[in-house]
Image 1: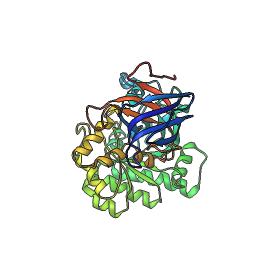
Image 2: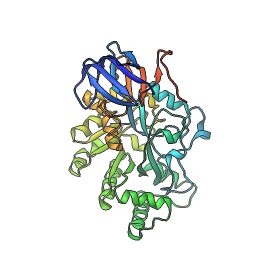
Image 3: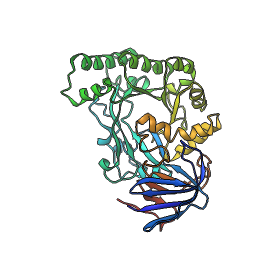
Image 4: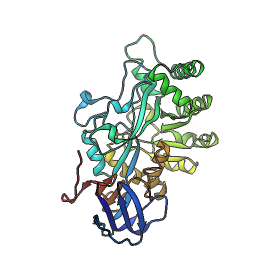
Amino acid sequence: MSNLLIRNAHIYPITAPNFYGDIRIKDGKIIEMADLLDPTDGETVIEAEGNFLFPGFIDAHTHLGLYDEGTGSVGNDANETVEAMTPHARAIDGVYPLDEGFREALMAGVTAVQVMPGSMNVIGGVTSVIKTHGRFIEDMVLRRYAGLKLALGENPKRVHSMGKSGELTRMGIMGLLREAFRTVDSTKTIGTFGSQMIQLALDRKMPVRVHAHRADDILSVVRFAQEFDLDYRIEHCTEGHLVAEKLRELGVKHVTVGPTFTRKSKIELQNKTWETYRILHEHDMIVSITTDHPYTPVQYLNLCAGLAAREGLPVDVALRAITIHPAQSLGVDDRVGSLEVGKDADLVLWSHFPLDYMSKPIMTIVDGRIVYSTDRSKTHHEM
């Protein structure tokens, strides 16, 4: 692991004022930041030449490595639809770390993602937060049990009504969830892995992360979470702008919004708009931006933040929405999401301000290692 000194950069720590200066990395951690630092023996010096240095970006909601690039249905491991309730499934057991999507993430400055089961099941399984660099999934994990994925509305209704005599309704979805959580809560039956995961959610040791696009489903998330006193996150929140006042009244904090850089491909997306980010922010919610890779490819996360800013989300908030906000929502802000002494050295040097459509990473560093560089002599792959 190299010790690095990055000099003469426009540094954006995210949680502190921007400044022009240097940053020192040792043993994979940030150890010093100042206007001017002198090199020490054995240190590799990188001249930033006035370019922009940011923390690695974080996508709060993806299926990276679960939908392989270029393989179609053969490489789809995101949804275990044999049954509607699969709390025993773990996203990391289906992730292919050598998928091209990880390389594209690094080339776009995305150094961490939450990888999630898909939304076809009422309970889809367990999510994890992972770094985007690595060959073996165990070496990439930041937080193994980051959430229990639930899904309301159109997706589980469609999938689990197909080929059956009846139809799964919104009433049925909420009933299935209530029965599953009530059973574990009342009996404390933790003999199965699935029941253990539900118990973690009931004990608030792991949040539920609930796919909800439509306004009524969004409010159902809150109602269900309050009934069982759950830590919860609203995922997608597409019609959140229609009920923003009510969400503020109910005390909703963390929302992950997107993918907005897509067409309106189904009924629940009819009211999709880039203004949702601004409106939820103005109603005191902590907004994270997602590509929902592969629905928008992960490499366009910075463009999604730029478009949200163009439609009224303050620029500093748009930057926080792909750095410290997802880090906080995912429970990994002690390690990533900002440039601070003691945090992981996950940094990206950009050619332009990263919300500019002309911008591209010059260099991506993960855990103090140069894992991508436009200067091939500096590119370092540890595979």
